[in-house]
Image (tube, rainbow, N blue to C red; front, side, top):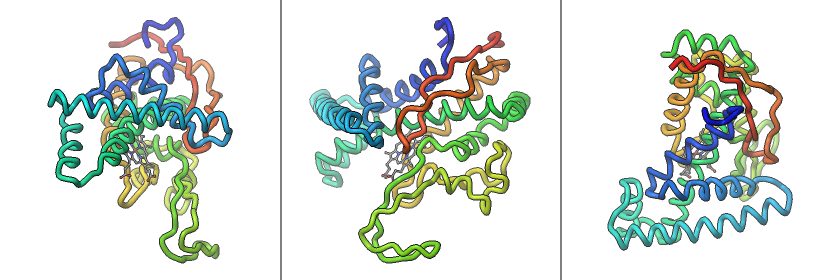
Amino acid sequence: MLRQPTPDIKRDLANKLPVRVIVDMLGVPQSDRDLIWEWSEAVGRLFSLDERSLREADEAIDAFREYVGRTVHRFRETGEAPDLAKAMLEQRDNEALTEDELVAMYLLILFGGSETTTNLLGNGFLALQRHRDQWDLLREHPDLVPGAIDELIRYDSPHHYLPRVADGDFEINGVPVRKGQTVIVVMGAANRDESVFPDPDRLDVTRPNRKEHLSFAFGAHYCLGAALARLEGDVVFSTLLRRFPDARLLDDQPVYAGSAMLRAIQSLPTDLGPDRG
Ligand code: HEM
């Protein structure tokens, strides 16, 4: 990022870091990380509504799946794989996973580890720039940063909604839902529920119940990478606040990519100010 004439927190940092981390964890060569990023971005477009994006997402999933199949084959041939990949292969060997499930899980972790955390970093930086008092508070009290990440995720959820299929009949706020119907659960709205989060539109990194957000979903499918996402957020914001305490966004009205589900800012050109090391 520092080598760019105008550093861009989204393009040059947020888009790059999570994919670098996850490819190492899964034994994918760093030389392929741009490819993984391109596919992850295209898969993210699966949640948009125009036909071209859907077609691109479909093509990316096919290419992604083929690549993962080859990677798994390489692990088996060489016997060399990082711990996470080995653990999945063991589950395949003792038939807890089918071959399709193994490839799908591997692909989901690669995708989940790239696209979502980038948006936590981008959205979080924008929120802190728009609430400069909170940026200053964290700058003065770096020990608050790890806990602040959940407030950033609550305030502007990287993943806005999810579909769920009802497994029985029930009623919610007077609306009947029948077994088998699809319900769209908008976690972004739940995160601003004033009966849970008083003054919900205020960013408050010391909010006592900030971890009660639903951005990582809940229940059996609670996000597998939540701890990693929090850690990456902590490392990035702690480093930015320490080294670039005077950073200023050059334009605080950024453009979003066209997905209603994933809140993805495209670009955040920033004047970093002096590097305080
Ligand atoms: C701020 C960053 C992240 C957000 C907001 C996020 C959000 C979510 C959400 C909402 C789900 C539930 C999806 C569903 O039930 O349909 C989920 C599941 C999942 N996430 Fe994340 N995620 C993040 C980071 C990560 C990372 C870093 C990884 C990989 C290391 C990851 C891997 C997964 C996987 C594998 C699942 C599926 C879990 C299952 O179905 O049992 N996520 N995530």
